[in-house]
Length: 189
Image 1 (spheres, rainbow, N blue to C red):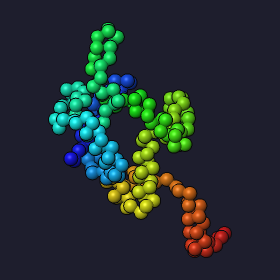
Image 2: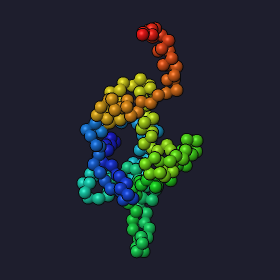
Image 3: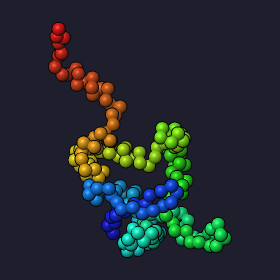
Image 4: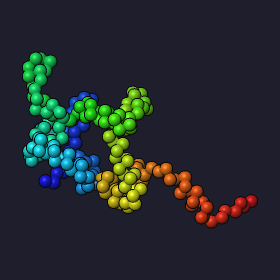
């Protein structure tokens, strides 16, 4: 069953709210998924059976429309007043990180770094860093810049190169080879 991302949930100082998505027309795109990602979506579809309605963003949260939800979705707990409330199940940053950080630690990737903007110590890599890795690997595999642009949802291909095309370990040898087989330079006074 095809699904489209039509909005995003953002964490606005601890309050989850809905926001129209994507930012530009380029953001409306088809993203290829690996078999493992397709399986993860299928598991969530079977587990949560999201409804096909499309409520208005101003209507507030509608967790019944979400494919990915937090682990406590549909359970109740007491609020500060002591009354039982149904948990909406929105996958928040804290309950996602509860799984993300152990996963990157287990994979041997986790590093604590100081965020230059906030001064806080945070774990790296962040999920968004995988977007950079994905785009870089596509470019390294020879996927044309225009195609990487379409897949990543950018309006301009140059932005793909500027943001995501990072030098690989073979850079020094590539530059050396280009210098050796290039024209001989002569010093001119």
